[in-house]
Image (cartoon, rainbow, N blue to C red):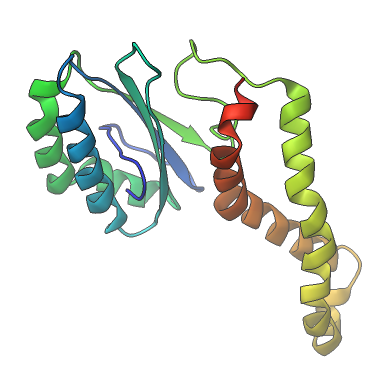
Length: 194
């Protein structure tokens, strides 16, 4: 993984990236051990092809459930991590510190941005989702076309109406989904989920 951990076991068979959502409930008195283990498994996952990062939601005071989202760029790469001997060994090493079996979900697309893994978690209001999404996409709609302009000048076929818009839209969406939005949501999480 990459800044947080991962956990799972099912297989995935689609054409786009995948978020592996893992829930671990840690036994009282084992949090420090779990945090150390979490750093190890995050580092191990980051070594796998297609790894795009990890987001960890640590439990608030008085609670023991960690929620981890691990992102891979392709279903096959997510499967490789989920079914790897490395992951299996790391999971078996932490089982004694867990109060229950791990819970694993597979999510696609951008649905994890605004939806923490547990249904008990507070959902952000729609206006906050709208505000953050607009704040991220607005500057990209100004910058990306300017970046593409030299390419459009060199290759006029790419500047054709529809083609040009498709390239710009695909680039904006890719930047939002894979690069910017996960970091922005993490940055404003305290405000967003309040």
